[in-house]
Image 1 (cartoon, rainbow, N blue to C red):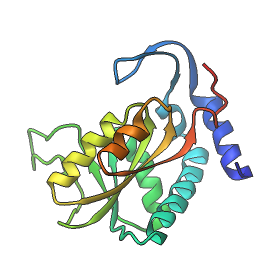
Image 2: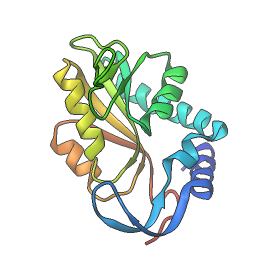
Image 3: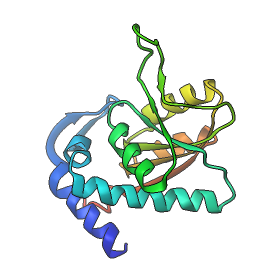
Length: 182
């Protein structure tokens, strides 16, 4: 791991790694929890994550994919996709967990055109469930979901589940990169 990634991994572990007994979104119980809000609300960490996401997105583009915009799922993905958007210059959309029942009654906020190549920026991936739900909403709206890039892969099935659905999976860090040993 290069020095920049190593310093970001250390910063995330220092501010966001909690020990105890936690129930995860997947329903599983874990003896550690990575509180995404404790790292995604820190400008010094968020700025560096924006650069790391931009580098991964560039790799996806270099492989021949047309990336038109980025997407982030409510709520944890919003600051991360915003940082990536600022760093890459690509526009982004926000995916709500469910349609609003007021105003415009949209589930997607921002502009998404049919056929747009989209990369989803995710916070912490356990099984990949929330990211795959967001991908389903984007696909239903006509997007071509190219990849999901998680900030952290807990290595509990997200990669396998995402790739099984035909979407590329990337992670900036794994739990080992953060020094997590269960």
